[in-house]
Image (tube, rainbow, N blue to C red):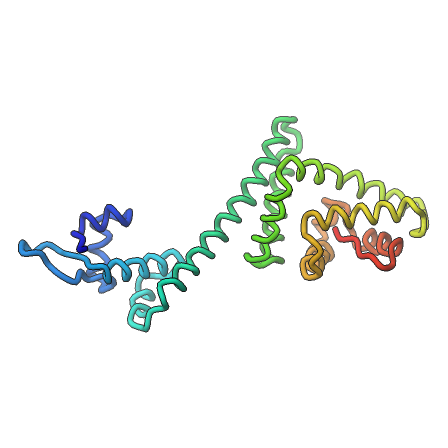
Amino acid sequence: MDYTVGELAKKAGLTVRTLHHYEQLGLLVPSGRSEAGYRLYSAADVRRLHRVLAYRQSGLALKDIAALLQTDSPPLRELLERQIAQVEGEIERRQRLLRALRHVAKQAHEGEEGLSEHLLSAMSLMRLMEQHFSPAELTVLARRRAQLGEQKIEALEAEWPALIRRAQALLDGGTPPSDPEVAGIARRWRELAQLFIGDQPQFRAKVQAMYAQDGDLQRKTGVTPQLIAYLRQSLPQEKPTP
């Protein structure tokens, strides 16, 4: 089935002017003409348009796309899979932003005091996660959160501050790591971490590195290398993760 320029523009969600522009650049030249001289686009033209839009969505300039179109095109399935991965990554980023905004909105309902700091902290943590974890890894973590559900997550996240404060108080008070209460906190710490990141060593290592390398994050959360070392001593065979 062939499409006129108007039909193709409407079905692809573009403007006729955009298709004319692509034609002027040599990106998409219609394969045929009707008896009246109107442009007609074939199925092959539709596939080429899909390639143009896929490259455009990836952030490439039109002049660079023109060069790529001269090379052997990847199979349609491969191109679609790349787009799917890209869209999924964008969805995950949007979902992380949504969770952060919901958290800040909850703080706003409870009062304006410190709201700006909560918002800045949420944005900072999002950037840190994106720096330390790949898009694929962030997708895995997002799926774990989805499995837990928002109510469960809120309850678990509310438990962290009290756990951190108690561990720090024991450390400051000189309580030895062998104390049963310290070991209990370390075990619960590990349980909470596993709920969020699973039992994958590479994830655990990245979270540890994120906290170890960022002094500002340590100050905001109270999770310091000294505190982690203290809890590790209470469970020699275990590694509580922030």
